[in-house]
Length: 94
Image 1 (cartoon, rainbow, N blue to C red):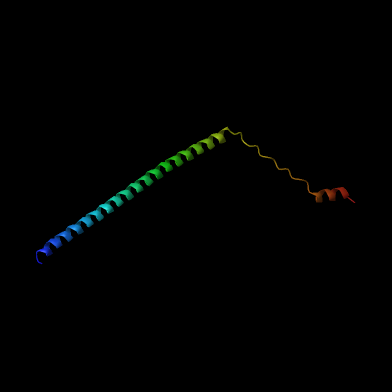
Image 2 (cartoon, rainbow, N blue to C red):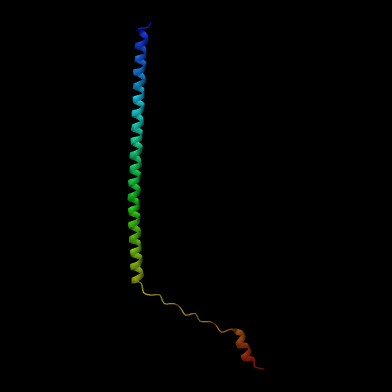
């Protein structure tokens, strides 16, 4: 009985170490995949930011060019209507 016990312990230990190493490998793989996904998201965000900034700059340039090319708008002169109360007093004169 004493002879089977050490071999059983070493077998159990090897089995536990194998399971532990497999678990650690899965964790490392998961962390690597998470880091790759985060890097891909960061690159995509940076690319989209560059595109947005370039579009905003082009839009601002186009708006400035359109404003420079457009003729100045003429403002309308507002004419006031004569009030009826002043005309009535001058016409009656009685």
